[in-house]
Amino acid sequence: MASDVREIVFATNNAHKLSELRAVVGDHLKVLSLEDIDCHDDIPETGDTLEENSMLKARWVKDKYGYDCIADDTGLEVVALDGAPGVHSARYAPGDGHDSKANMELLLHNMEGVTDRRARFRTVITLLTGADGCRVVDGVVNGTIATSPRGENGFGYDPVFLPDEAAGLSFAQMDADAKNMISHRGRATRTLLNLLEKQA
Ligand code: IMP
Image 1 (cartoon, rainbow, N blue to C red):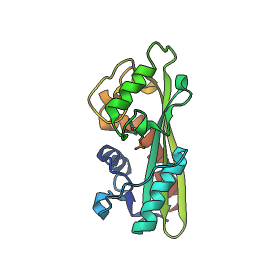
Image 2: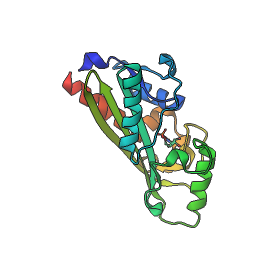
Image 3: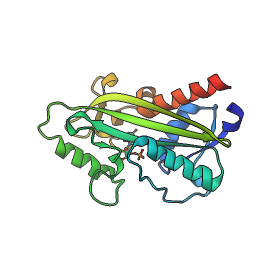
C-alpha cells in the first residue's frame, strides 16, 4: 500500500492546511495541491457530517482526476452551542461562507456572557488510493473559546481557540510546529501515517 500512496493530492485550496499537512507528512508522501493538478473546481461540501464531506471531496478528485487523494473536513464544536458551528463551521456567518472574520465575530457574539466556554476541533481525513483503498481517521483537540481574538498566526478560528495544552495561548499565538504537535489536523495526519506504515 505504501508505494501507491507515494504521490497524493490533498483536496484543498487552503494554503495553511496544505503547509500544515506537508510539515507533518515530511518525506513520507509527496503531497500535491489542487492547483498542481489544475483542478479549479468548486468541490461541493453538502454532507451532514465531517465524514461525509471529507469523503465527497476525496471522491470528487479520485473519480474526476484519477489521483490518489486525501481530503479533510474540520468542525469547531462548542459545548454551550450544542456542538455548533460543527459541520457548518466554514459557513457559520450569513453570506457566501469562508469569511473567517465574520465567523469568529458571530461565534464571539453567540458566546457573550457564556461561562462554559469548552470546545473542540475535530478533523476527519479520508484517504482514497488505488482501485478501492479507503482509510478514514480523525483527530481532536480540546480547548476553550476566548472572549476576544488573540494572535496573528494560523487561519480560521485560530485566534479564538485556546487549546487546553497551550497554557492560555490561542492557536494563532503559536508557531506552526507547536500547533501541529497538538492540533486536530496534526493528530489525524499522524494517525493516518501510522496506519500506512503498519500496512507497508
Ligand atoms: P473546512 O474543513 O475547510 O471546511 O473548515 C471548516 C471551518 O473551520 C473553516 O471556517 C476553517 O477556516 C475552519 N478551520 C479548519 N481548520 C482550522 C484550524 O486548524 N484552525 C482554525 N480554524 C480551522
